[in-house]
Length: 293
Image (cartoon, rainbow, N blue to C red):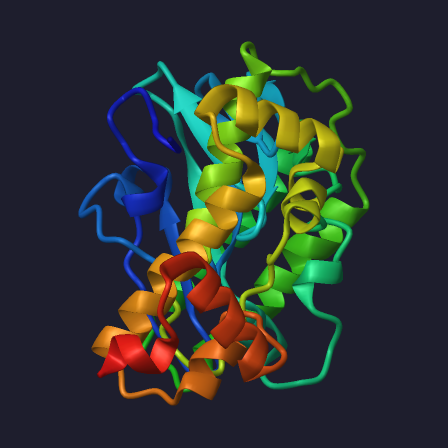
C-alpha cells in the first residue's frame, strides 16, 4: 500500500546495510528510485527532506499534503505511505536504527523521542533558510558516507543528531486531514502493521504488538473503533487476524527451524510455554510437538 503513484514503492526502495554500530544509509530521492531492494522497515527510522514536488503523506490514520519544502520523520512501527503525481520531486532521505544513532550508549530510545512517537507530529515545513541549512546537513552526510575514513559514521551520527535537534526547535504542521474511506484506510494500516512484525527471524525478537489494543494505540484510534472497522471491511475480527497470523508464523517456525518450542513461544509473545501450547492446540487441534513430529 505504501507506493508512489509514479510506480516507486516505498517499502522496496532501500537495501539493508550494516556499518559499525548499526545500520545507516543516506541518499537523494532520485538515487532512491534506482535498485528497489527490500530493507527491513521493522528496524529503521527515516528522515526525509522534501525540497520540490507535491506529495501526500498518509501517516497512521492521518494525512497531510506536502506542497512546500518539508522535513518528515517516519517511525518503523507506524504504517505510512507516500503518494505523488510529480516526477520532478527532489530531496534527500536517510535511514538508520536505534543502534546506529546511539552507538551502544544507553541513551533514550528513539521510540520515546517526541519526533518519532506514534502520536507525535511527523511533518515540519521549512522556510528558505531552514531548507538551505537542512540541505547542507544532508549533503555533508552524503559526502561523509562516501569517504574511506575510519570514523566517518561518528561524523554522520553527529549530523543525524543535529537534524533531530533542528527539528525539535521548529513548529510542527497542525493541519492534517482524515483520508477518504477511513474505514478501509484504517483496516489497511492495521493489516500492514500486523504483517510488519513478521517473519520472526531470531529467538531474541519478541512480538511487541500482541492484542487489538496495542495496534489501536499505534494507529491513534480507539480500540472499539478499530475492531468495528476491521470487522466491517474484512468480515473478521481484529483478534482473529492477529491470532491467525501468529498461528501461521508458529507453524513456519516449528517446521523450518530447530528452535525449542519454548523459544518459539517466547518470541511470539507467550510468557509461558504452556500458554502457547494451549493457544496452538485451540486453533489447530494439535500440539506444537505433534506438528513437529
